[in-house]
Image (cartoon, rainbow, N blue to C red; front, side):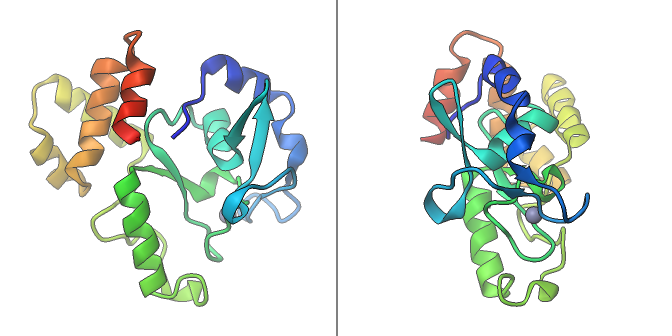
Amino acid sequence: MKLIYPATIERARQRFWLHVDRSGGPNACWIWTGSRGYYGYGRVNVSGSSYLAHRMAYALTKGDPGCFWVLHDCPEGDNPSCVNPQHLWLGTAEDNSQDMAQKRRHGAHTHPERFARGERAGSAKLTETEVANIRQELARGTRGRLLAQRFGVSESVISCIKLRQTWCRSSRRRQTCRDERS
Ligand SMILES: [Zn+2]
C-alpha cells in the first residue's frame, strides 16, 4: 500500500479533478478519465510516481489514508474507476477481502439492490469522528479488544489506528506502516 506524502497531495490538488467526469451529479459515481491500471482502477501520476486515483481522491478530500486501504462502496455496484469520495471508505487488507467475498456471495455486482449499503458483518465502516474517538480511548488506556467490540470492527483495525497514533508522528512512521501492510 503506497503512502501519499503531504507534498504530493498538494501537487495533485491542482490537476486531479480535471480528469474526473462528475456529470452524473454529486451522488453518482465520478469516473476517472485518465489512465487505468489493473482491474480498471484509475492511476494518477504525480511527480513521476504512480498512485491509485481513488486513493488520491480520498487523500485530497478527507485526509491522508495512511496505512489504511481505501475501499469502494458504490450504490450501483462497485466501480473501480469511481473517485467520488462519498463512495469511498477506509478499511484494512482484511476488510478488503471480507468485503469482496461478501459482495460476491450476495451478488452485489449483478444485483446491487440486494446489497444494502452500510450492512457489513464484521467490518463496519468507521467515520473520522469514530477514529478520533478510538484514538482518545487508546490514549486513556482502553484495551483494543474492548474497542473492537464496541465499534464493531476487527482488532486489526484498532491496531492500525494505534500504530498511526504511536508511530506515525515519528520519522520511522512510513517504513513502519509499509511493513505493517506488506
Ligand atoms: Zn462510485
